[in-house]
Amino acid sequence: MATESALQRNEGASTRVFFALWPEPALAEKLTGIAGELSASLGGKPTRAETVHLTLAFLGDVPNARLPELATLPPVGAIAPFVLALDRLGSWQHNRLAWMGCSESPPLMNLVLGLRRQLGEAGFAIRDPDRPFFPHLTLVRKLPAGLAASVRHLPQDIDWPCREYRLVASTLSAAGSSYRTLARYRLSA
Ligand code: 2AM
Image (cartoon, protein in one colour):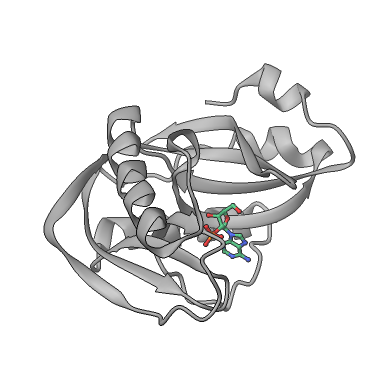
């Protein structure tokens, strides 16, 4: 469902937007607790609980005139709520971030592919469409340069019950990104 007041607050000609799964506060706290431990041992800047998410589709700048149309697209159909098993931690050197990820998840892929199809049919382009989708939640940014890239399996999965996804506006500043939810979409079979 689109939040009208949120849609009206977009200044400028366009807004940087993306669709994402957003954990409930209790799970977000747990994940950012891990982010804090990682950054304490590796360095870098941990993600705050209110900003931790898994991006499904990144559109980048969308003209504000088209935001109401984007925000009122119906939820992607025929995807029942699902549980995502977060089971690994990794880091990348190219963008100096540490992340948490998951093994293959058919419902997650169906949601991503359904969303891409829906956006394409509605005339919205996603950024870098040829980049393979790599599901992850960024836990730490600005890792020290030169850290060896690694992937570590968690001793126990962290189960994430996914019931909805969001359309989010992102504002970049020197202090980092701030996010504002423009619409929420419930998953249903
Ligand atoms: P990141 O956490 O790996 O940087 C808002 O910036 C969200 O969109 C973040 O989750 C970010 O991923 C993701 N994002 C930014 N640019 C992107 C792109 N070109 N393709 C896919 N996701 C992108």
